[in-house]
Image (cartoon, rainbow, N blue to C red):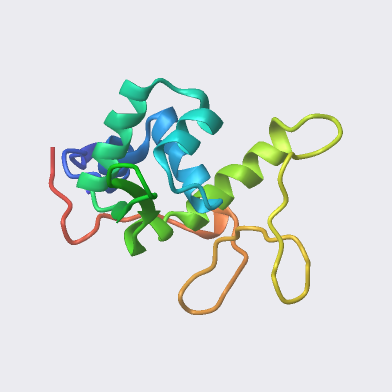
Amino acid sequence: MTWLETSTENCTVQRTLDLIGEKWSLLVLRDAMNGVRRFDDFRRHVGLSEAVLSDRLRKLVAAGVLDTVPYREPGHRTRHEYRLSRKGWDLWPVMLALKQWGDRYTADPEGPPLEVRHRDCGEPLETVVVCTGGHGPLTPREAYTRPGTAAHAM
């Protein structure tokens, strides 16, 4: 079965984009990965309306990408912080890959606005593709696709 003969109804890329592929969702995740936890901080830093932010947070929580943790400041009602779940942190390499691509193709002439470095040695991080056999970094010409166990014909 070739790619064009394979149904995309259960495509995991499509399902992932359904969950996190919208611009505001990715920016909320970017901020969460950089320590933002509270609604007002997301709204101020990302720059979106309360209604849109509420919707995106609700969807990310429902998908298990973010967890809510209650907190209460003295004299105020109980509110919730939004923290990345394990599922959310599993998106970290994806965000680094997006950042790496953006740094290469969309950064200001002075360079990127944010650096991500290794805590032990201080060197910049980069995303690469390797195989489970330990080979890499790999290029697209060194990889191939084939139908997986859940593939269906069109």
